Length: 137
Image (spheres, rainbow, N blue to C red):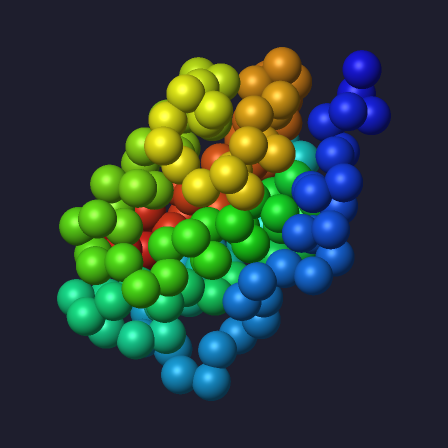
């Protein structure tokens, strides 16, 4: 049932996203648009990523994209660049193949597990991860 897609965690995360907004200091940024639904996200790195990942985002997007971005911002924070890129790529792959719960990822990511049952929404969930990966690589 589609209503299960919008679990309480997704709704709460989208209403109070972590690191939403433009940071005071911007080291670099990358913007991506999902042409299928119109979601647009800009991910900012607020410091030198060779020291630690510190991501922020702005978006005009659905709750899935916003919630996914919030999870990404929180759980990549403080990682070194190589670990962060690996984490981002692994999560993106797990969202795509529906295996989030089969990994040792933060429990917050489990709210995205059902996305795989709705192929048209997978891009919504992966857009922040794809954007952050492009920014940091």
